[in-house]
Image (cartoon, rainbow, N blue to C red; front, side):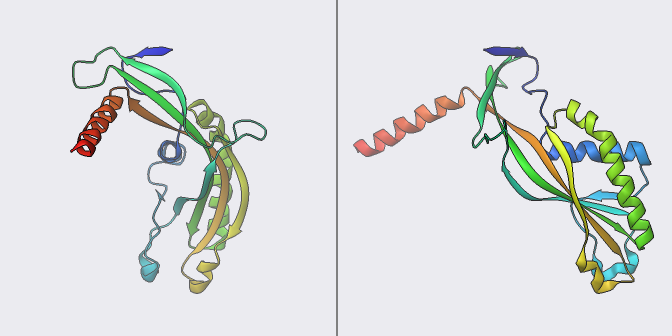
Length: 201
């Protein structure tokens, strides 16, 4: 069944990139825009004296097809819905099919600070803030976010007086959506025809 929408975009799903972008906005709103850095890339530890703290680094360490029941994993994208583009004027396809797949990911947030006292304080603050944000993130389409563990980053022991790190690991369940224009299947017909013509030569 096709759904009429003015934009070729499905609501009610949040993928990893959406989650990270939303978290950045939420942290800035809760802590002030000048609280520190929320980034996928670490600082230059060879120039540790010029690192600006605090820093929270985020990245995925694993991703697998997600659970959609007690023991069922969504091992491939499945059809979600069709979207009718009412403003189609030749620039966009009139119909787009939406396919989705749920993933379970292990996401790490590294908290960087100058001292153990500072890093422990910010780590606790971050955990509590994520807990407060969980309901909002789920409203926006995130399936789940669960705290798994906290551990020190032993790499920081190499320069003990320069920085301290705590690694927070979360289980995150999210959905990725893929928009497939219906007229893309016409391209398959064209390719098949050309391949048949080449074989007939």
